[in-house]
Length: 417
Image (tube, rainbow, N blue to C red; front, side, top):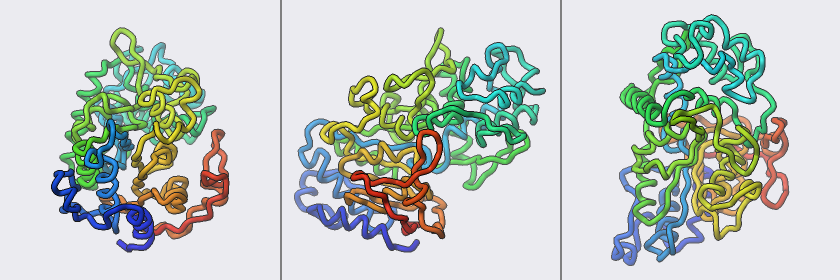
């Protein structure tokens, strides 16, 4: 991997700290402060910067209370996506239930009539409402659900969702949680554990067949992120996961880094009679099923659930003294809550435009960029189009990415790969 920009980003952080290496000071050693493992490789000077951050903001620095540190989950803490893993497992094992009255529009307020009609096809007609669909044996049935979930369109190419706020909602992510309807929270956790076991034991690069398609069939925890989380916890930080995957699914995977259910904010389904429904938890008074932990929605749920901010104010950035000190993410879905972090922001480079524009621009010197820890992406050939089309408006149209002072961020070269 070529060391270009990351060193500059890390140096900006290191220059403002008391220590410039991962070797702890004598005072730190005497206090037995938690240290990141020296056996795990980070890019450039990133480990140095992270260790300095921990030393200066955790219990060894005499921090009052527990500073809040927030991580996205999929492709930030692990390689690949736990929502995918569980949805694929449910399709292969025939666990997705026919919706009420066979009406697929009841599963998502944003589903188009074309998608609902396609889902009522041969596979959809073969199960009574509330009963499992034959997706494990009927490839056509599995293919239609998979296409709507993975591609956001039907197998014939018709758009599956419309009419949503692109900075508060990704309907296919929400739909993965809504497809769990009819099961209890604990039943879904059992499904997720089986999917986790399969994906962790499968060789790296494994594909699995769902319907007629070959899809990702493996996952791995990133050792560096697992070590970072455990070190932060030992250093007195309140570490939380903020994810656009379903709550019970992320709860299962978070066990692998030592975090319990109360440390997870995922897509949360309302329950009736102890069973999950297609209705989702609200945030910021945005309206029924209109927001999930996604871009501005992640900020909303952090502010509402962790900072106690109610109503529309939950969508607004809170005063620095209240906010998280650390944020980590890999995608544009994470850009707002990571940007809200006051001390350090760790970005795993998956070539996502808005996030990379902000992290490479590094306007306040608090952004760190690291390549993916497993199968890092090669350098993106063209600069990120920050100055013209890096920002997605609520209606889905593109606009320039603006810095916090309102100026346009110039196009950025991909430098950490």
